Image 1 (cartoon, rainbow, N blue to C red):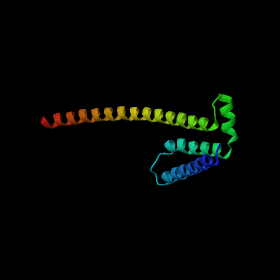
Image 2 (image 1 turned 30 degrees about the vertical axis):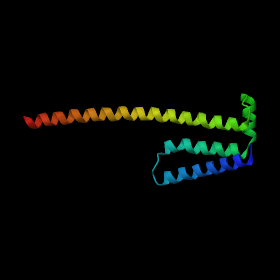
Image 3 (image 1 turned 60 degrees about the horizontal axis):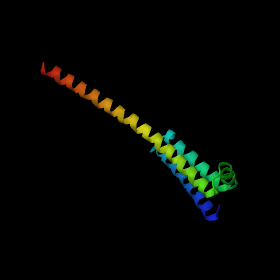
Image 4 (image 1 turned 90 degrees about the horizontal axis):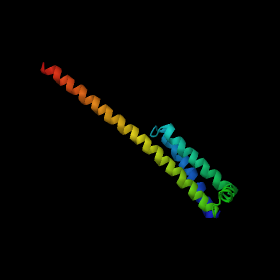
Length: 116
């Protein structure tokens, strides 16, 4: 792994880690949502400090170079995060739809009562 990539990974992981704790302190993000990013930054930090790990895994999985393994891992983790966010958005959209329907029924029933 080149020193430039190693420096970029260390810098990015530390910045993400600091940014997440800053957002948690200001209550701008849920702790459950930020856990992914904290773990992600710790993994990036470990991979960048110990370049033997991606070398070992790239050989074990048959990936041509450790850099490709790191990119593959990052892309894979981000795809998982996008999927989890899609599931969460679907759940929230269904909840909003149900709440809107309940409010419409409640408003309709109240308007019926006032007409009587």
